[in-house]
Length: 299
Length: 279
Image 1 (cartoon, rainbow over the protein chains, first blue to last red):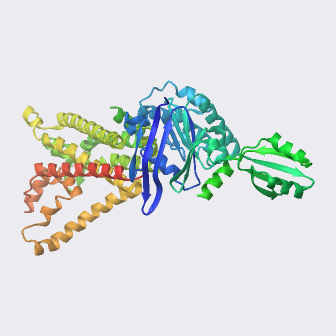
Image 2: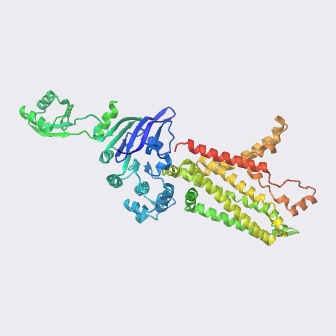
Image 3: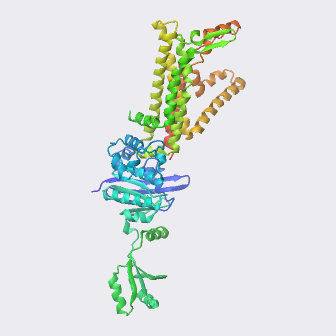
């Protein structure tokens, strides 16, 4: 059985009357890559802050390692980056990492390896304050990995970076995920989550909307994109098919949304029988973004 | 030891703190320079060292009082280091990395205790050396009498530093915390003035002195009373002009207890603040 790393029970945080996180129950198991999704202000950072011992919960509880370790002991086993990289600007990269090893009570042997991984070994003797934002962010990743964590928590790791920086960080995250580290990635950038995560948790206004595999956010059978010379005939024909829920017209042609499984060749066969020949037929799955929007808007 | 080494690592790698600490210890040594001061005041000429400031056991009183004035150096470091932890958000990062809030506070307190211990030892050694050179009395019993001034010195520093620690955590900004410290000094002065003026009208049995000695800075200041009027030269002058001093220069146990209670409150308050606040 997969080991439970973190369990949240009815965890809540209120700021005055505002409920930032409302009765959140989540289980994180070893070996998965989780995406924590939600628009700005949906309670992602507050949730992470609570399990990372910097925000006091209003009610509810959480347990690390099924209660085997105190929160602060458990945090020594994991790695976390939240929002901005926080280091001592007057210390060099190497000194900062040495200090973190003292705090985490881990060996300093892997410092070189991790700095090389993020491409900062050459700059190890430079003071942190001389680093660019991208370098700071990469140092934060090295710092989070220095204890070879079982769980890596990343909160908006690409915030404020230029496209090249974003690409570097994503490549790093993918690499780390491939090595089998459990990751919890909080982001409002959906494609980011879609690319690396296999499980998602969707939050809105502090409430959990969904928890499960990426594909299963909404019950969806996908949709067809179709084009034909005689669009009217095509449209009226599509509306007759049982599996088609709705047909929409847009600039590229027609979009037929399904309410039951229907394969491309089946549809193609039906169309041929009806003497309708299409210039374009493609079956598509809705993107995570579409699913996310429909999920948070419907409810 | 791990907690102490974490804090020392933070202090030592900060250039400003390093300079201040080294400067502090150099200044302690420079008290020896006092011995070379020759005061020329009209017809009155004297050498400070020869006026008995380095006589045992008076030296314990004099040097602990003077050197304690330098405590502001380390106070600045404490306040600045905590201000940094907030402004760099490294306190948050430390907690995320697995330091507990009590460990964070303890690492600061251990650094304070280490500093106070080192400073007290240094004062002890310097006094033995200076006293050994200049003191008129060198009997064993006299040398090691009045050692309670060293204890008072250590408690005075500890009390003051825990006050600074509390203010720094309360206010989070180093400059404002130091400003508040100065303001508090003024406040105690005003409170004392008001009490002298009005207190006896309301509660006749209490005098302002009795109340003010429970205030933190006043209590810390009272631990070692000013030693200057105890100098025989000054006593003589005072006697001549008919203004004899009768003052108790001793260390009061009550005073020590007051300061220790304040220290306890400051540490407890600091922990409460750390625990309650979200970061």
